[in-house]
Image (cartoon, rainbow, N blue to C red; front, side):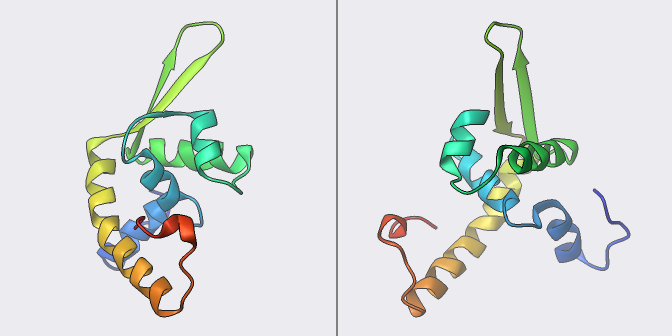
Length: 116
């Protein structure tokens, strides 16, 4: 948490998921754990630096767990904590709303037809 005190629950939640990439990172981690490169490929447009920074912040907030394996080449995996799973459940409604909004504005890309 970076900006307490908060004025309401939405304020506290936005402190954790605010910004362009955090909610998308959480959504990418929803199904399973990922290595850094897999996340980078799943999120076209995010730079390596920004992804690393956002993952560090999500880890510091207790939303993402980072596991480092002592192997060569280095292996690091990211997965949601229980708090992250709960947060993704809350984001699901927001994703459905956003998808409906895209449909209303005729902005749904073909590949996103079944995505939230």
